[in-house]
Image (tube, rainbow, N blue to C red; front, side):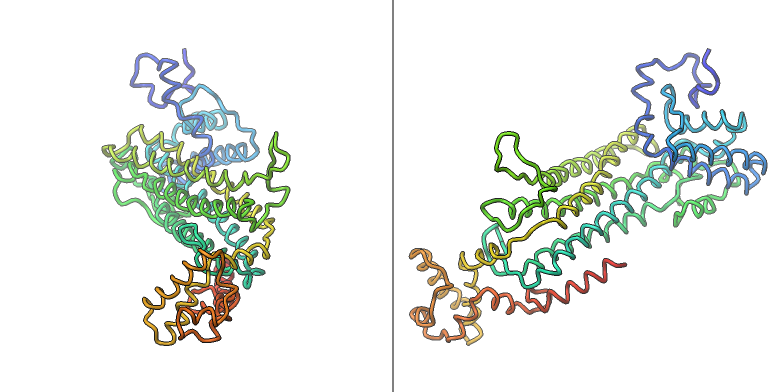
Length: 462
């Protein structure tokens, strides 16, 4: 006969035990290990609330509390005895609690269902995961800011359509990625705030027939508010969708940065080189230095996009309130937490990157990057910009046909196309002058970049 402590929590309803393969399929124990400590934290808050409300006697509440604190300590010390014949983490904790304090452990489940219990566990886990992701995002943003500090006047080609477009500052380019990460931080904060709603007290779906105080338990857990509707409380997994969306969006931004690193460290660009300790080689080609970290970050973004789709696809067809389909959401939720580690490694790579400033500058001297500067030169002298664009377009076309760039042109060369070119035009097409001319708010001119760098540095200190 099965020992009472190993029976499922619902065993009284059934005359025969669950078949082994069915039990294995329905069990969530392996997934639940990630939320075990959160489950105990929620149980501690629940037990104390039951004691304050006199639903349990003071002695019962203290006994249960002591047992749960022992379990939490065992989990932290990795000495907790994990059985393999139970359904979920709730059953594991209750069994261990019974071993420690006896039958009074059975009173812990008073005024609570596994439905509001797991909803709470997952919210606590998600909040902690959002905090860890925020830490990783901040560290990556700081790494970019640190590298940008010494590259304010480093000129490089800016690109549109992956074609050389205009001269930009390397610092300006790096700070563009910082802006995306700062938006990610805003989304993380918003997701964390929405997740901070306690479902504890909703019961299975309809509330509980006890004089509970859900607000006091929420406060103890650091949650800002309590559910308003018990059905929604156990059915809601928006916070998981929020987290997987935030992770996917952040991963996309990290992937765009990683893609630039892959391009910049290629022989075709040669703008940068990974530190030896941050790259790998080839088993057959001795010359190779592969950007594995950047490629893996880029690849992980695709995985996290799939996680978001999996969560939303599961939710879209579910009736209220709780359904076991929701158990499947833990896989994409847990997978999405892997982004924090990926960003941490990417930060290490960024800090060790070596930029080749000479190669970047040489690249600005080819590709007609100063064409817009020439058009602006004419426009500032009263030539309609569309006409100026046409004039410079002809200069570019004929220069390319002759294998020449703008850098070698004299004012006499320019005046063959239009007599309104002035001698200053030759100076205005130099990369440094082109860079300095973009002094509009948010532009790439060194003074604007210094302002942006100072503002970002202050913002990331918060």
